Amino acid sequence: MSQEARERAVLAAVRERRQQVNDAIDDDLPVAEPERLYEASRYILEAGGKRLRPAVLLLTAEALADTSDTPAYRDFPDCIGGHVDVMSAAVSIEVIQSFTLIHDDIMDDDDLRRGSPAVHREYDTETAILAGDTLYSKAFEIMLETGAPPERGLRAMRTLAETCTHICEGQAMDIDFETRGDVVTDEYLEMVELKTAVLYAAAATLPGLLLSADEETVEALYNYGLRVGQAFQIQDDVLDLTVPSAELGKQRGSDLVEDKTTIITLHAAEHGVDVDGLLDAEDPADVTEAAVQAAVQALQDAGSIQYASGLAEDLVEEGKAHLEVLPENEARHRLEQIADYLIERGY
Image 1 (cartoon, one colour):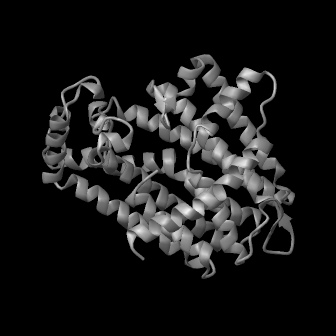
Image 2 (cartoon, helix red, strand yellow):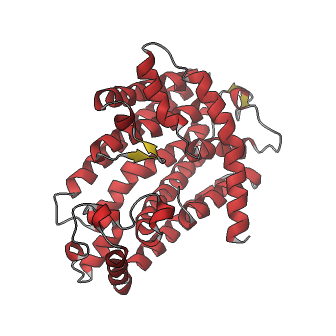
């Protein structure tokens, strides 16, 4: 399948499930009192987003069920004759993702998210913090509504809690890297795993837990999400340097200006590039396109961008191999295509 055809297939699959996830968010996270708090909590959810992680969760459930029928996600058949509400798990994952974005924007002091003012800009920092905290707690409330038997429900809740802890650990590592000059590649990959990849891993794992899949399958699904999630973040590092600013929605090369540690800069530093001297500016808006292009050329000459792209491709192939535990069906193929699309275009 060509890249263009794969892109169409992926977008169609995600779009089909996104609308159902959006409807479920309206049901599971209504605006209540105090109204301003819940409006702020819903603000980022209503600002857009492709709902990729919940789509991965729903597709994984479909692949496990091995059915070509249009599924009723609120009453989904498990592997032993029962039924579970997998849509609640999908909403929970998206709510956690939104919680992390609100707090990320506060810590990074970013003005925009998905083309709209960040929550702390649209409201205020105090309200944004509370909105993020509210989403965090609501995610667990929503997960309780899956209707899974207690043992399976407890494992799902534990997975969600561990995932949130790992995300915070990864964020702390990322912050620590900003003041360190001795970060090594293995540390960076661990940070990416914790900060970004574990939420993809949870999205792929939760259906296995809730639907009572065997342990081999659960572990394989987790590894699929973990490797694809790592690849996505590495490819995001590449896109920051290689995609035009207009398409990115931010200044190309902003990671370099902000001295962010990436797999690219680590590789370049190991190969003699003066990474700190590539872009001399305090604000990405002050960097000229010519300066960015010169920096990118230096990284290409060192083979660093190519190295990162190759690593992302290897991780995706490793991730897709873990899907062999699933039946051969359309949902499994969509999960494979999503993995490929993530490193072709990113989200």
